[in-house]
Image (tube, rainbow, N blue to C red; front, side):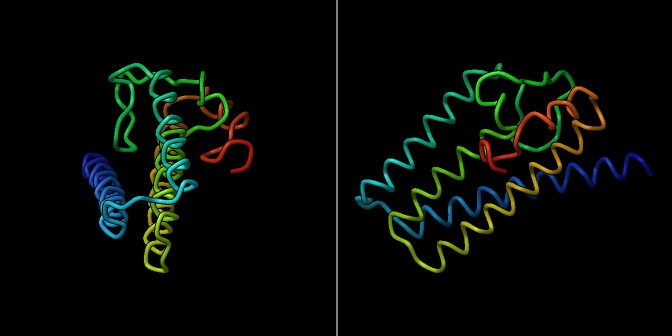
Length: 152
């Protein structure tokens, strides 16, 4: 029974990743290749730079695209991780907000909202798994926000 639950958990994790990439692809397809406004372009590049900054503080092989925790994963609490627990999700959200604002529509805001929900579910699942694995994570949660620095 326990193996079944673990397999189901991993399947749900992969489903969240697939949803994430489908929503990102939809946003990119909805907006096509066009010259976005300056603010939208600035948001996109700020999100990308923040993502690169985040990666710089995480060792290759330590992070995982799914919310599953790798066997030898270390808790990172430096760089962006000292302020938020999921800086890569924040990076993706800022980048995609830039895409949405380049040519706003009700449909693109709806797809963006679905992306926000998907990344929030991934974050919650990852946190649940970290809590089971480490008491240190509980302390880390009290010192940091989930996705948006200083707010949420």
